[in-house]
Image 1 (cartoon, rainbow, N blue to C red):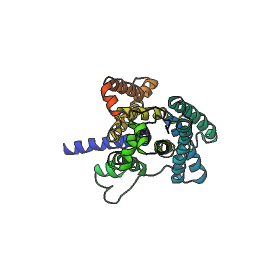
Image 2 (cartoon, rainbow, N blue to C red):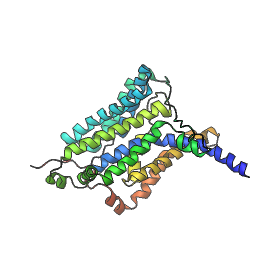
Image 3 (cartoon, rainbow, N blue to C red):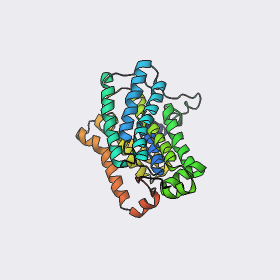
Image 4 (cartoon, one colour):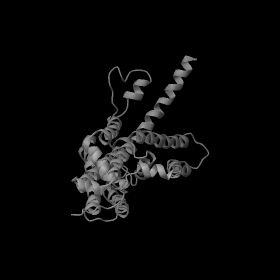
Length: 314
């Protein structure tokens, strides 16, 4: 009996590890978007920034042979893309929704152009962590100490963001800017500069999420490889009610759905592959519909100035 239970647990370990890998790009992208939205800025260009990070990170790794350098370039390229959005919305006061959608379209086209020569090319992925003794512990060792370094980095950044928002002075200032930009400006806080920093951080995280896809999750480049994960990350922030701890749970949930549909296809179930590929997005729609039923809760948790342009009154 004990041997049967042990063997059953061993069978479950690989899917759980794969689920964490699938959740990691969502953790990065959603964490960045959460900080951005907490400052009162709605950036719908997450998908585009992820694609830009993915293609520039992969191209760098393919040319230099260094996946670590590729990851750095992925984050920086996502950050530079977010600056385009920041300049247009925070300085020129363009509409945040329209600008975010334009950034996604721009990122999709730019990634296809830059990645044209790299389609189908593969690189060596970043390997998993191995800690002597700890990684060798049966079952628990692989589950806790057998992932790649970016899984741990994503979790660290997520909970670090939670501490920043709830425990640090500047985190509370950022929340104040998101809830009442006029009041924060009247007190003397640099509203535009704080939002610039938040948008830039969001771009950095989206770029890292995209870089993770092309350098670790599937170490190759293909057009539209994010497959809507940027939009899922946006929905994930709402699903988590703008609370960092819930982002991890939501990312694992959506990652699990993604892996489930892949395993179902591999098992040869008599369900059309297109329908199985729709499952993560069907789940996203269902979750958003359920959440939207409680409008009062959304208004209480959402930043009051979310999506609203700010013009300093002297």
